[in-house]
Amino acid sequence: MRVLNSSQMREADRRTIEEIGIPSLVLMENAGRQVVAAMEAIYTDLAERHVGVLCGRGNNGGDGFVVARTLAQRGVAVSVFLIGQVSDVRGDARVNLDILGRLGLTVVEVADGQAWELHVSEVRDCSLIVDAIFGTGLNAPVTGLIESVITDINASPV
Image 1 (cartoon, rainbow, N blue to C red):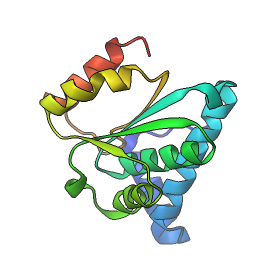
Image 2: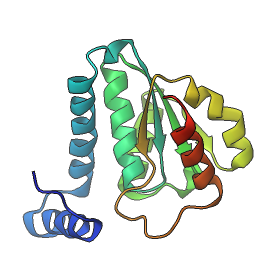
Image 3: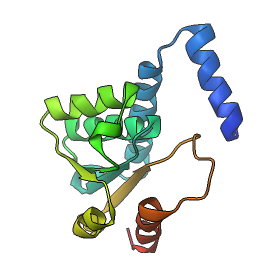
Image 4: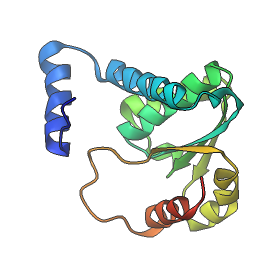
């Protein structure tokens, strides 16, 4: 398997979309479904687990929304947490967020530190956490709310 750095991955995505013609929404769907396939291969008891999916506002968050939908469709208990505001989710990520809503899946909006403190125990109650906060677009150190979320999750036994 070839491992790509972030700039190579962005270029691979661009070429796939622009030169080959596979829409980015299809890439997002494939990515989310493959994450679930990998989870099923690793966790034979996935159906008995409660999975927390932490999503950012960008395309990686969109991948996470696909993961959450796919898990829910397979009967896995799933809780979805958006680190940010729903109004800031755009593009293909918004398409997948809206699909979750139409399917009746609740997305917990965690827009600030107070909201995180309110919901962090729900995340810790999950037996598995999927990190879909950032993808290849992260280009600076995390601070504020995001830093708190990452620090708390990394310190949890989950």
